[in-house]
Length: 124
Image (tube, rainbow, N blue to C red; front, top):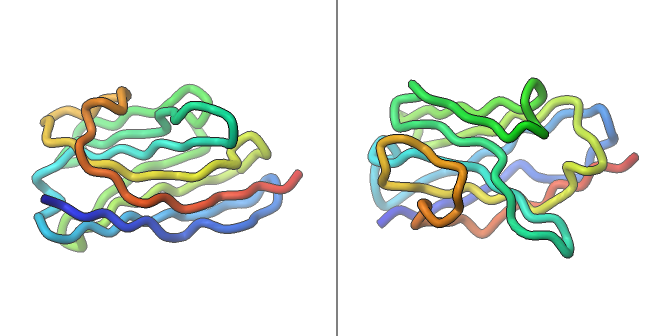
């Protein structure tokens, strides 16, 4: 089993940047493909980005393409989400998740392990 802890959330003005981190413990991060999801108040959880075990495959939601970058450092057991040009509509709780699948997916049902989330608030 792997435990996931997100950090790096906070309050930022529109146009600003934040870098989220997801630290894994209990099992090597390299065993998992990883994803970032978010959930805004009153909305369903939605896919943001995903990265395969060795970073060979990366996928983004259309709403964040060109602004967000997912990366991972398996030696540090950490996954990152660099968020630039933030908009008010990016406000949400951001979750990282781990899947035992070789290739990442955008559906939340393929991810077995989840972190507790970190709040990102973008003021307009």
